[in-house]
Image (tube, rainbow over all chains, first blue to last red; front, side, top):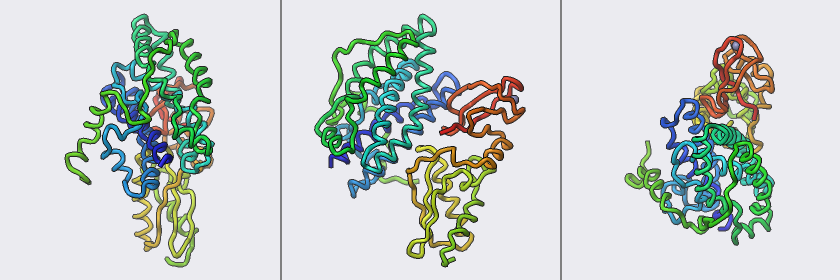
Length: 247
Length: 150
Ligand SMILES: [Zn+2]
């Protein structure tokens, strides 16, 4: 049960993050960027799919699609960061950069998991996340060290999204239990490396690291911001309106 | 074919083209990981290039069609994720085919497929598919795609 929950947490962050990025498809400012964001979304959907198939195996009853399309808001465990609206391009880049830098370090640790499914998944995803990080990092520098206006805008994005980074490093009972068994990651152990990535990138980007103030929490127990419900109502519309529709 | 000749299966699979790069086969791409004969069934293990690769479903269907056409129906296709696919599994002859087809093959030194110049610049980490990045040649100025090393 803990393992299923742990698997869903990782899967849900990929799925919801992918869904948000997919909203950029046909809307980005250049064709190249449109394709880049859509390709990153596709990677994230692929990663979510691998884990939801595994979750289905663990559950023995629900299918991967059931998990994606038939759960309610409170049954999702994605990081709150991932459900935040896209905002302007700078907001999306900051969100992608913060999330990818965490994922990069998290998957690096998870690839050493004693659970073969999770380690294979992490090892594969790591190769993809490296590119997500590289891409978002280069935009951080271009926007932060760009014009006065672009710097001001991404600094604001960073300030407003910062409160969602606290969840990356939380450990609850499930995390502790699985970490003890050598299956799950000790999230606290990657904080230092994460700080290094963030600090060097922000320095290159001429951006200021926000102070930790009020930090969001709750997604591990299915608590979310108001944005997840709206996202799900769009993502799940078809399966809700026409249950089990196939084409 | 009931005799467990896995070599014949490899031969047939080598005739199934990659749906996106038809000059190379799914075997040359390195996505066929194993062919075993277990309980009178050929068990074919395949691995996706990228997690979200949309071609996976297509090459499963193409493999099914190819084997059925050759009178083989005792087979199962299994998706595996470990070891993760890597461009290191592409042979030099496969890389040559890519270059001839107009895609700069995976390598440290990126070559323009048009004029073979190594003076090129990156346009975007993401090309028409996740497995390729987008570049332009500084010599002949033509745009081209490069198969990313992963
Ligand atoms: Zn050229």
